[in-house]
Length: 423
Ligand code: BGC
Image (tube, rainbow, N blue to C red):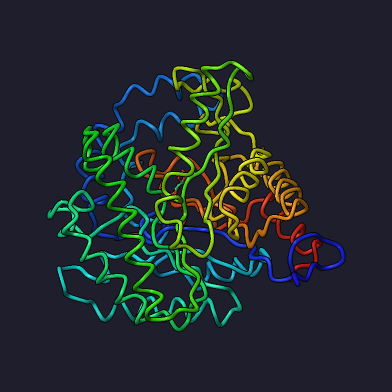
């Protein structure tokens, strides 16, 4: 019997948390992304950015957008050294869960060579979370890889899957006894598309065959990881964090729009989950987008409201996507990411409020929802957009000794969680 507390429809042990990834916050990483950033910072700073220029906040962001330093992760937000301070923030925000990344390139800097100091670092890191009563959700792979691995072809080569498997084994042997949850792979659909189809991210390839191969290989990598983790500790709940969108037809009942909607839902939202169907204990869902599709598989979203980076915002779209995922897979669901770029904190409270309502509606329909992890705890390095988009519940001033300042919306979120009497 699921226990609900009297004031709220959320389960007593609902996971209220936030998410991060190693490369985006730690600082001083050395992986294929950090190498690529240094090679591409100048080019990225000089792109025309005609779309961003149409946004109302262009004046506020333009200097950063055109500054090559924006595109280098560098010191990050020094989370590697300041994690204890950051975990105190989690407590202040009444959060009980934290999804964090392990940086593979630190643990295995050369093929088959394990760095004991770094292994110890993550032991201390996880121990600190547990000491504070925060549930650690370990994420194994969030797009960054040791350079030796990408030099051998990365996930585009099936023979390289054995290296990932070794890494998974090592991590589970080390930390498995301390964990209830492991997420293997973050957003395989986004990674495969941007790195091998549109050619935007490293290794910047535009190759449909490789794209398909990478997508399949990531599914295989997950299945292998699942088996390895379960053989070491069958109690750990294992899943992926896939990006899902609330995909809708632009013109309802228009045959072509409905067909492209069906195709996009299948390809973007479900394909990966289907490939790993019998190898996941929960569905990890990263939700950012509601997208309206025309018959030409083109997005035609309403013009407003937009977040700082011009993404159309429809937070309530979380409800239909949760419901559809539940109907299809009947597995517990965790919202593993959800959030927005909002430097002036104008929309975040509304977004959080709508997201909570959407989850309440889903739970009331019988969905087993286990948790909600907001993206992100801290302002972080937003890949090829760099530092200017601000996703943090907590602002980080990189020009003032990495000072952390809790945003008003985050304070509101903390009190809302408390009101729901979940602590
Ligand atoms: C990614 C994060 C990223 C976030 C916001 C997600 O797709 O998993 O790494 O920071 O979107 O852009």
